[in-house]
Image 1 (cartoon, rainbow, N blue to C red):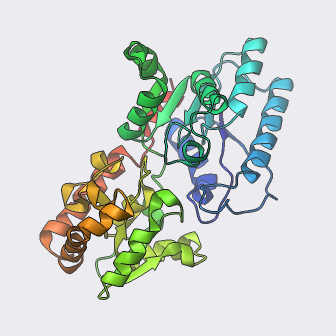
Image 2: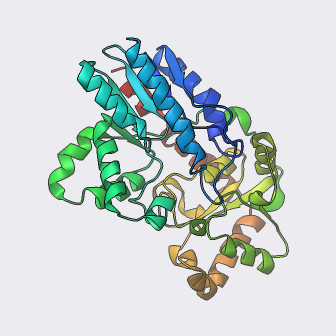
Image 3: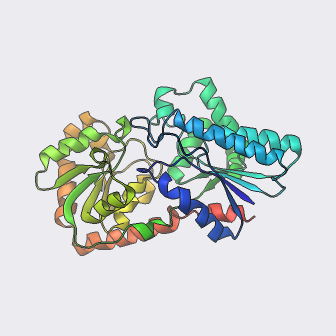
Length: 354
């Protein structure tokens, strides 16, 4: 049996699709029975401003999940060989599961998908709490409790390892615990259509958070009157409405200071558009040079002001030459590479059938 400890539903996040798509994909890829461990469905469907989730609501949700899991243990449902997959590794329930399994002598395998944590100085935990002993020790405990820690990019693995385990002597330990796997987003091809005829629209699909640098996007909007700049946060878009906007748009722009995967930049490629990203973070390994600009252009708003013309030129080149063979070929090539390596959870599925 595979138990999927899922993420709470938020309409504007991919967690809305993971509710149905993730368990189905695990079942399809492994041929195993799936039990989804959900929390209450009556918590607010929203987020703390600028955050990925609601800081209080997520703990209500996770606490209910822990209760349900404990009842499964008490009822004798959990057996040797079972797998638990945490859609978000930053979940205190992994410690309770480890406690129950080891004291009851049940041999299970625990998997956690890491999205962010205090080890990333641009994440909410890293920015607001930093390396406080309680948060770092919690992350050490969770990492150790998981048998397999899944990360979606090499950049994320290196960020985690260099911060949490800088001692070279921990290399073998890390290699035994870490799996580099794409995220389970094979379903995106069903929801986002590839369109060739596009409008001169440039999207900001990121959260309104400091590490996303909305101020740079807004300044570009003032500078480039030939294009329509849309901050998706200004509209209460459903997922289908957002996908439709992707299909209309030529570009997704990023000046992000935090990115361990970058889903929206892949989504625009799937729709037949182009991402424009800084040459840093996970973008370095994921995107072709034609879609990257020098990192210094957006390392801060001050740096942006000094290098603005370089960035404006890059935007104009991609937008005005959008239908050139070089751009269109790069869209397809980059999309196919990301689909094969970063937006399919093949390595996770393989771990679940070992």
